[in-house]
Image 1 (cartoon, helix red, strand yellow):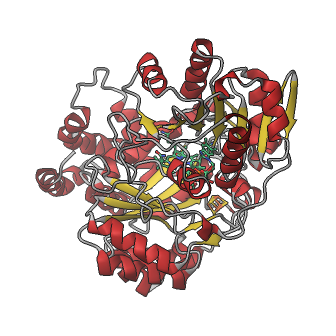
Image 2 (cartoon, rainbow, N blue to C red; image 1 turned 180 degrees about the vertical axis):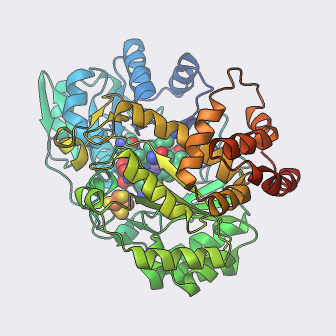
Length: 537
Ligand code: B12
Ligand code: SF4
């Protein structure tokens, strides 16, 4: 059995990784009995454990990310207490870089699969099977979020009933003997921790079956709202705060003909959104355009979600994105401060970026430009400078993320040299640095809310630009003013955003008074009221 645990609140996007792992396993060992289950924050731990144990699994694989690791470890401890014979395998970017540490601390964990999971897991199952099992393919089902395989239903990773007939009785010793040849796995052998050499990436990524074309994911399932898809895997950039490239250091592409078939099939089921998991969708511009054309040809109303580099957007790309309903575009620039960019090993071309944003604006695309707060050399003031510069381009949306020092990243190793202090539990949020105090980090968080209310909600956006132009006050200053103004509301009703919208004329008055521009209130109020009538919260 294999299990994933949703990002809290995000239930529309089905996790994909276990389907890739399962598909590969079934290809090499068709008789394997694998059930995938996906859990969410509304299911309590005893209920999750019951659902897992009802399957009588012999081996359970958990897919681990920073948003679910705490809960998964808790589940593993309890599972092992109930049935010490079950073998527990962890995989995913959250455990790959700290396999040894986890095995040392968590006795409930038997094996950690590091890096790319498909081949390692298939070998692991085959190896364990050779010594103790007969495999049997079985029907599978999941709880609320039901995704089906070709034969029944499925999403969590247990290798089910019948998978390891005598496997439950295996000892740590015999497992150790079996696994020593499998690259990319770490495991315990008595008191010793065995860390096999890393596994090289699959040379031909096309060997991984498509979860969609193979029928592993039942696209007819009404719970599948957003469909994740990899058209490629890996990244050749080396941003120091990022973990992805450590797992997948080379960009490998699925063939365009496979991607075309996948999109044709997925789009024929009219999902709400197709979420491309490619780290930079347009890193290969020509290929991206071809994929967009395929998407446009088969699309019947789905949105497209992509991560882009704005510098690589030309007019044709923007037009194709618009025709493909790409109304969910992420553009991570993280900072515009050259010293910061150098320290995190990222390139940024201001002129090309401006051009790209202009094209995105021309086609009225909805995109989100992302900054990160307490990066090296990033001060509160330099972040405000970035913000003002970005807002001068009238972007669709800007967000500031809290820096997370992810396990296995270069930045985490170098954090001390930048004075970055962070929480050592997931999500590893930084709370101060040499250049940003803890008070400033908290201020940035408050400012993020101001950006949502004053800009993203549209209610105040036009007034914001009008006030900036007429009073000569920076957008970042207006946002700070809003934070000060909003702090006066001690009680926050359930419909707080609505409440704030209604109070926005009061904020305008405050702003005008504060900057000694009382006359602007009368001038700007009609526009604000008009906007208030036409916009929602
Ligand atoms: C889709 C996605 C999301 C979705 C959620 C997906 C979901 N499952 O519900 C959303 C958009 C919500 C999201 C949010 C965030 N995400 Co995100 N996200 C991704 C993304 C783009 C795709 C994940 C994926 O499915 N990849 C494809 C699969 C095939 O790769 P994989 O997950 O690595 O799995 C392989 C191996 O790891 C292994 N494996 C995985 N599980 C298992 C299990 C077993 C048993 C085995 C044997 C092997 C195995 O085998 C797989 C195949 O080779 C990745 C980047 C990427 N392209 O991978 C980031 C990524 C997972 N996200 C990341 C981060 C940091 C975030 C955010 C914190 C970003 C932010 N600043 O807000 C937030 C967290 C939200 C929260 N509330 O906590 C990091 C996670 C690092 C970590 N330690 O967990 C990643 C890796 C990106 C990065 N730059 O490093 N994310
Ligand atoms: S942040 Fe994006 S571009 Fe940078 S290494 Fe990670 S995946 Fe690649």
